[in-house]
Image 1 (cartoon, rainbow, N blue to C red):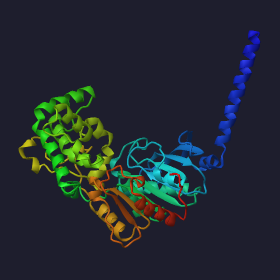
Image 2 (spheres, one colour; image 1 turned 90 degrees about the vertical axis):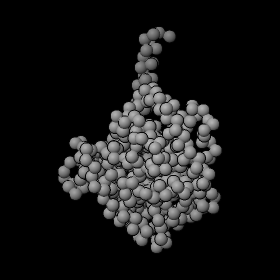
Image 3 (cartoon, one colour; image 1 turned 30 degrees about the horizontal axis):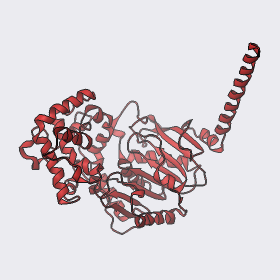
Image 4 (cartoon, helix red, strand yellow; image 1 turned 60 degrees about the horizontal axis):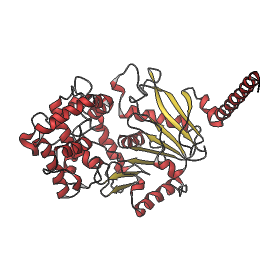
Length: 436
């Protein structure tokens, strides 16, 4: 075939493909939902791809007041991800406690419905400039979430479910405390409500969790790591060099001791509870190090990890609460760590912690919070500061025996799952998706 004809044919073909592609994109963009999104002044909308259970997915940056008490003042952009199935189906709003990406939540699959993933203020892409710490409060974040509900309820008018994991689970509770009418059902996973900077309930939990035999193995491993510091600390430093970790905030030797102290919390938080896998004095130094590296706080106390979630620690030391470490059982084996963690704080002066916020929220949960399903893991130390129900409301608390921080609805027995699902169906007036 003549080369000019070939080139002409190819040009026509590419023009056709390009035009066809543009037509498809235009057709997708001109949906009813997309048109509505463009009418909302606060929204910057970008169409993205993702889970094919959704017909449309968008990354949306929402213009939000830094201080909701001064709505005409400084603004910032808050990132959310909208995944659409049908406007006549429920909306699952996943509240993240940190930065976020977009992934399909357990409840979204169960309900085969729409989803809104919300990044927490001061994390990820949702950071004000200039950065003023004083507006990083539980109430300001709750105001963000209330405003988001207000905006999206103009389009999604069916039932709303709020959910979140860990700090996100706590965020679900906090939002509902201040705006109980926003949401029909709340399902916070493994969400604590701490009462102080070093909540002592964590110590009591670690001293009573699982079996005496397993608790002893955990403690003995920590002692082993301190006893063998002369062998393990050089490996700790070598690991830091290889992985480009620095410990200037905490100090290398103190960071090593804190990594060992953190082990008891982290082990119960994340492990499957099979303590036969824990190394002992007969294990090689390589086995001991590998176990500490995987289950301790080796990277947690590095500069990058601490700076990466400074906003979290700011919240911990002002309103949210945290935990410390009981060093007394280790005696002279601890040389540098004092059990306290104010070195996490991003500013030079540690503020006075305000316990009244979480006290009020705990009282509200016990006496007024309705249509909550609280999910906890039986071995997870964060369950020690979880909610306490009194039976005054219809809310339920489900604790998975031996469960970790990874506990989800699917983790429970058939009987317990049926109870959870029956509550969801009753409160939402829907039938759950049988294929979840």
